[in-house]
Length: 207
Ligand code: URA
Ligand code: SF4
Image (tube, rainbow, N blue to C red; front, side, top):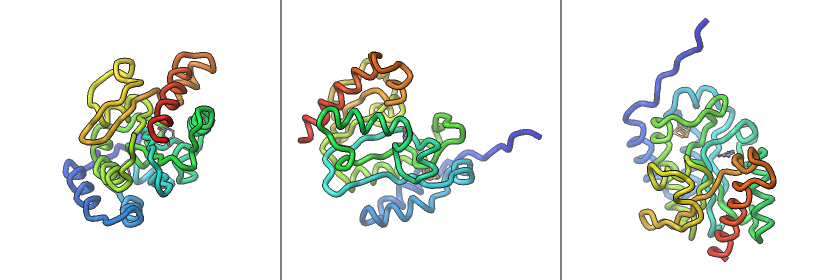
């Protein structure tokens, strides 16, 4: 048997989610709508949870990742697997605190096998994330890795943009490495050093 082939998200999905997101008056209403979203047929059929994100009241710093992995899909919470544990550790090391940090992903449902979200999936979920950012209104967004960074900046390389604050449509954005890059390159690798340095700057700028 061949693998089942899934229809891509409907070309109208980005407009539909953006319109629904704009109608949501607050975080709770928005979260309810996101949890029932089926705009991406494959992700909606294979997910266990919709990982809406964490939004502690009054968070000034927001961290944006790419998409949930297996542990996030199981638990419904963002960044709880290996990458999340490293993020918590490094944040604490530089005087930050995960409990007071908002954590979102560009795409709320796990792509099977942790593949990179497709362009149509990313576009379908964009309206939800934009409304989340509008409602949370953080002082600074740290983007982890290339997907989250390109979500704001468009085509770029991480090396060229990381470690600096970029202003995008009124949002201050600080791109850095994804914790998975720091895990891959080991405890003495450059990605871990730069991720730590960038998180330290983020904590300083939001204290
Ligand atoms: N990687 C991400 O980008 N997001 C998560 O929530 C977990 C791992
Ligand atoms: Fe909907 Fe986003 Fe999940 Fe796609 S990834 S089904 S747009 S919530």
